[in-house]
Amino acid sequence: MKKIFILILMSVSINYCLFSENEITVFNGGTHLLELSLYSTFFMGTTARSRSFGNTLSSRLYDTHLIQLNPAGMAVAKKNMLSFDLVPGYSFDIGNLYSGLQDEVNNAVDDTIEKDESPNIEKNYPDLKTNIGQSGGINQFGLIVNNEKYGSFGFLWNKPFYLDMNFNGNALNFTVEDQAIKNEGTNDEYIELTILPLNMELFSNAQISMQQSNIAWGKTLNEKIAIGTSVNFASMSMESKLNANIGGFIRQYGGDTDINVAFDDPNTAYRNTMNDSIDIDFKGRFIGMVFSTSWQHSENWAFDMSISTPREKDLNGSLHIVQHTLGALKLDADDDEDTFDVELLKPAQIAYTNRTEYYSDKLKLSIPGSFAISATHQKGDRKFIFSYEKPIGELSLDYSCIRYRDGENRDTTGVFIAYADTTNLNYKVGIKPKHIFKIAFGWTHFALSAQITLADLIADNIKDSDGVQVKTSSIIIPGLAVGTGFNLNKNTLIDFNVIALPSPFLRTSVTWYF
Image 1 (cartoon, helix red, strand yellow):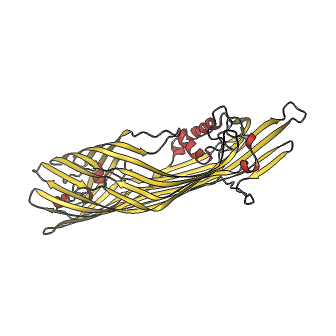
Image 2: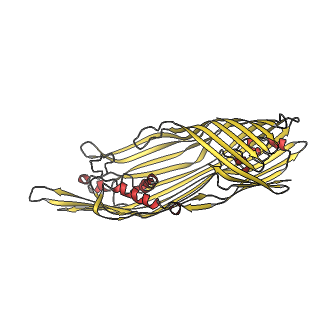
Image 3: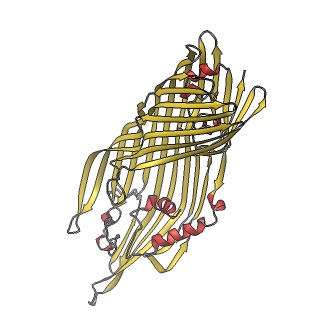
């Protein structure tokens, strides 16, 4: 939690307030509110019933999830069905759930400014409220209609991923003071004072949403073999905005020196803003296919196979990021050096800010397909299902951007020299799943399943805080589900996820057979 808070607190002020010799005399953490709402069923089933059984493609699970995973299974079922998913929405204030949160926040502030704070510092700790919850509502609708002559037809709509995040940070401010003895040892000796008060406001929001629709057909070739295919239409939208407004001024006085420079001063001939911004808006649509076959070997055994195609799309939209840094800061200062170099502060150097801008209209989203097989043993009300998937492709974001930089840098003699450069950059982040194993047990009205995904992290051209390339690493993503189902009446079935990790909490499917 400490690291999370430091990230939030310093997201705007990083490289601005990490002073090593100068003293912070005033610190006010302000008020911060983070609201996060998430819903995700990616790789975790389109219905509560499919999730309870590990999102396997078994044709012995007569459910509308077959439309997407195994359209051949629709023909095996030979049932008309209508279903929808209900997910409760909720939000928890972590501060109320975890009483130690405020102490960790306060400790994080103390650790951050420990070596910089004045002995007589006026310090108010930040007020942080973090509300994290689940986006509720109807997130799936499915329909299967069986025709004896032409086969079974299905339509499925679902929302596999939705994230909504808002962050407001108000009244974060601090004052840094420094003093230096000038003309030391002479009759003209005097103390020069430098005061830098800064105040910050941060407004950020992000929304990522994915929806998909499937149209499917399945038909039996004989008593044992069925085939099917489906077309998947998916849409993806990604929006993110951030405005970091930093205000304040620098005053330097003592002897004959009396300099006052304010940030965002419209009367200055040079750039002196430290405001940052992010504006991202991308959208795109995808089309994929699923081909499947089902073999009903006997009353007790069924075998299923499906192939889904990988999808890749260049999203339409743009990315624009603007960052400013203060030229009078020494960003690569060692622990025994001043980051804030008061000796070099001059009117045009105090508030002349360096600018970095990122422009891009190239963002590619890749979604993997898979080759999947499953074996089902059924005896009465008991089911045992084993499924293996070999993913095809990767789940990744690949974007290229142009970076513009201009401003003033100091040379080895401390003189400020103007610079400007343009660089083409490319980044890719995501995961590359390699193997997925699924196992499920069902008896009477209960189901238990486990899922293991072996994958590699993708972090091309991503560097850590020390500027070192992040190495590709292997990860294991576990999944666990416990569910129950019962008949509301003769033709209506309700399935409920008691436990589903990682997946929506208390997810419920209602299926009507007609």
